[in-house]
Image (cartoon, rainbow, N blue to C red):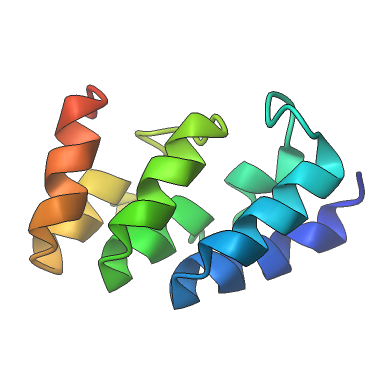
Length: 103
């Protein structure tokens, strides 16, 4: 699937819209096993997982992890999704990431 789907996935994660995340990623692969856009990063290095963690959208974090998002992907300034969640004080996201074995 073309990478132009990536910005849509990033936006849906930032807004906490799981139904759109599902729609966009299932369009790439109905099994969610091979979705290139799950790890899309914008020019600053922000991925959908970073965005969902920053905004506290734990349901999106769980969905993105199930879809194979790289849990420890460095983003802006080298910050991982766990660091972003900690800096944003998003306890539910922190717990989800730790349960999924984030470093």
